[in-house]
Length: 372
Image (cartoon, rainbow, N blue to C red; front, side):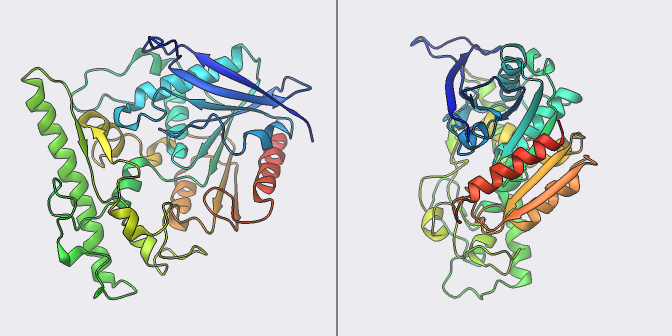
């Protein structure tokens, strides 16, 4: 295998300047074989997780590819996320690959939550469609000046932020200001709850989840109206109990080889009453941009319908947060006529199994080379 060179990349954002301490808003690490400047490069970005040291970066570089683990300014700053700003800053990384590194083939790697984000990037690049959320007048100009990619990979990807959070949220919370409030009729962790879950309970639970999302979304709109009449334009708030997807508890729903009960933080009952997870802190504008079923444009479906690139979809049958129906939704909504799908017997991070990451990197490399 080739040896790997790593290059730190810090670039200006078209939206905000460098921090007073000197940091660039857009940062990442570029991996490549030490012996050459590759003409094909992968770029991976997430809504808020640091992808600069993505677990596949060195695997791909050792196989002759460039790999840019790229972060927008929302790395570690999820409460302030805005989609049009994020796609504009992904565009900074792609332009750097094209113009500075002279990369000829750009591969979007939509991994985990980044699946819908990278789909949104390509969608906006080929057919500008983003609209300002409630309370905002315009999309930033730089979100209209994006270079499209050449290939798309979906890797253990979620179907979109609002869908994921809604499926994960606990509808039995009866007071958003009290994380211990409880509507016992919807409590999925009740010792008296019939298991496997009944069809009627599942239906009521899913309806309650959608209703909770809508209540929070309406509160955000009302709050923005109230704030705009005073001195403030936005505010932070917290959302509790977001690890309660019934699929985390009952393996008969959307069956796969995963263990249950289980979620990315381990025991869903414990995680649900903890303070860690996605969506726990937001501004009103960020909630509407990223989490709201009614308002958010971070759902993958409409963006996937604009992706006509050759596409590789990879999922993991022991994933405790991405389920078979999620992958099926992604495949169903893709417009690509050149689509390859593969399933690996492993977990979300490809750690469950000997040399699984090598095998996935081999597949990705071979698939890319077959399309170059």
